[in-house]
Image 1 (cartoon, rainbow, N blue to C red):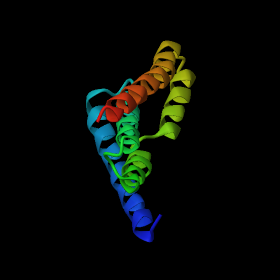
Image 2: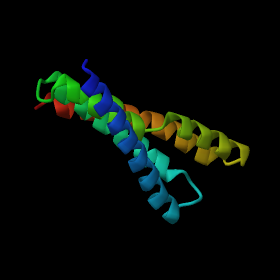
Image 3: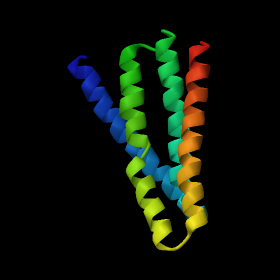
Image 4: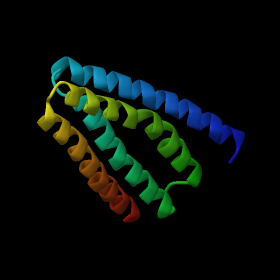
Length: 124
């Protein structure tokens, strides 16, 4: 791995974090009662990471781009810590159904979407 790949990963991570912040803000303006933004971000990020890994495994995407997009951009875009915090916040509010949907739905959805992305990417 070259220094340029590391720099590109860092820049991509920053861009991913800004994209996450903006998308979550837009969604939060419309839906305040439930952490829908984090769920959408983590689900789309899981799908895209599966797709990137599938494309890289199929030789369509160079390994450097897997690092830049997957580790950099998508690492900055997705957020496990925020999802965990939001689950705890929902539980503290006594919103057990919302917490369960948030936690279980995101985990299962991320697993399925990552698998779908990996499968689609490997078809290339």
